[in-house]
Length: 305
Ligand code: TXA
Ligand code: MG
Image 1 (tube, helix red, strand yellow):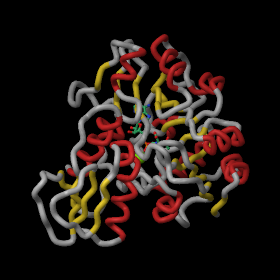
Image 2: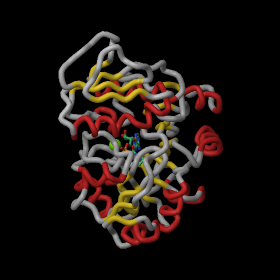
Image 3: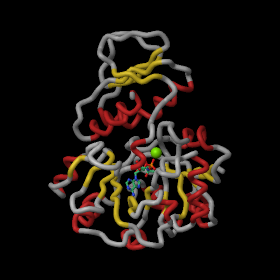
């Protein structure tokens, strides 16, 4: 069902169901973290590989204790500075957290969304809610309830309808389970911002050891159309353009934004729009990798791979 009532959506979570809800990053597909059967429904509905762990969403700081067996000094600082907000902190998990939620890992990602509607929904759930992005696995994350509906209608119990999400890219993920914090996924909170709080924070380097963020090895954020970086000259039939300065050529479909923030916010919905219109090639302008620009370039590279 579709609803605008957070209490109505929360009732599904309390009864062992799955409900999609908006956050400031993207829409998530939620279930009670402590209900293994409900968590299994998330993987089934999304066709998500079982080796990709979920993020637990909380509405108050005291819920951290239910999820994490310990919180070191670095994690404590990140929580103090960035919760509520678009940051996921990976911590050692308690025994109560079922392994299906963490894909067998002994750590769990914890995040407190800032969006008022998300906060209201999570409070009404009265339990931490695990939620991956509410798209079919492999598709771009949904930034509108209509995109959730497009992917998951008939496969989930409920969609809590909100506005288009504010940020449009998934949260920053920082692993705080070791001595040195490791940035696993870029997002609206940049490496520089994390380092301003804990200077030792490092960027995860691929192949240094086993993948720390299992989800990052799966293909992500891909529309059906081919995604290519715009070099300033390309022209093609049935092609689209997205960027922050007007391209020289005419495109079938084009979006030019005033800021990198607007570009980031609109990217995933633009990918979906291109697919709905049967566009063959999407030309994407590069941006400088500063602030959210780093996360935007990360998602563009993954889509262009
Ligand atoms: O903004 C977001 O984070 C959204 C909203 C709904 O909160 N959620 C989201 O979830 O993007 P998902 O499942 O699409 O991405 C979670 C990412 C994956 O790359 C996963 O591998 C990583 O976080 N992750 C989750 N738990 C982890 C853990 N214990 N250790 C390492 N990486 C983890
Ligand atoms: Mg996802």
